[in-house]
Length: 119
Image (tube, rainbow, N blue to C red; front, side, top):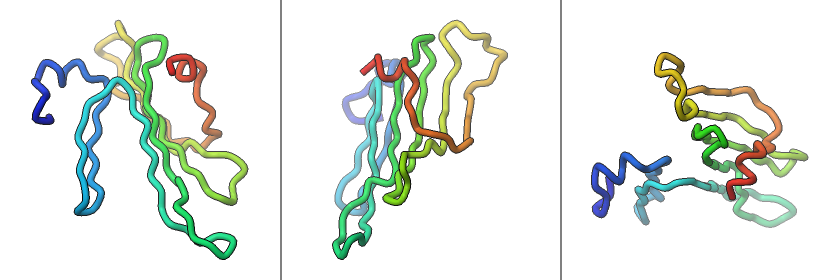
């Protein structure tokens, strides 16, 4: 919980993040959506560059469930690959169902329609 948050505002948050960038900075926040990009330095074509190799996106689906997708990028790949997808139960779902759905099957990283419309 950040200094300006109360337990009530934390309970209303859809997503949370906690990041540390070496000894330079830290970030802890709650939000209605997240887009995180992590890059690393690579050597390519006799030059170095920061390559965005992992992207984490989150959104609310039409049914009220919350989704978080982790995507990997590589300079030699034709398209990005989804490496993980997490989804909370839909609003009104049975409490006896799973608390979290997880999909670790690698597939094309095309985002579902509901995510594109919510942006």
